[in-house]
Length: 73
Image 1 (cartoon, rainbow, N blue to C red):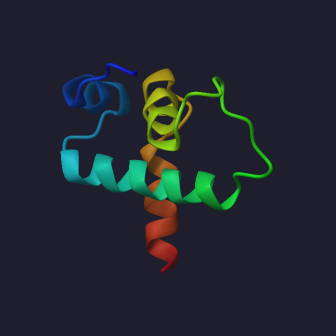
Image 2: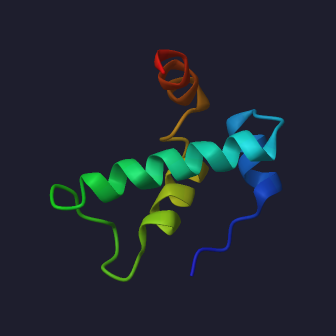
């Protein structure tokens, strides 16, 4: 199980709104679910939300990409 705290994620991303951070994680989770046949998770036991939290913590998922997609809608 991934043990990551919201405060750590907020510091890592530079975001100040936890709800926007959660929206970012939800959007990425949905994207992974659509592409689930083309990707492999690090661990076979790792679920999509855990993978997304790990990506955010590792700095692979940036809020800038989320804001760009948000403007397109």
